Image (cartoon, rainbow, N blue to C red; front, side):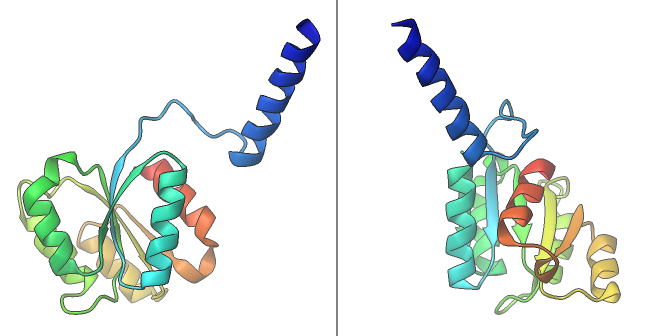
Length: 151
């Protein structure tokens, strides 16, 4: 009996190690993360990874769609993952309007974009982004982990 319990404990530790990063804080409560990303394949991958980590992603494929979601349920959203290059209203305009709204101005926002230019990053930070991540500088798993840590 004791032998099987030890084997089970070892197996559980091996599984935990293979599915989580070293030093990851498992005590963090799950977050409601609004993902504003228009690339459908990337969007699906982000949602999949966030769900796998135990979070509750909410999908928006445009700034206009994100605006509607925030009007209905802004209080339950903890964090916003924001792309800049979106159809219709771009992410920077969305961020600017969001920061003018008293109910939304304090929401945490990380801009995650292919635009790695210093001017674009500076503009996003001036408009109130909490962070700016260039997609091509990291793999998706690392970006998701960075966003989760900041949320």
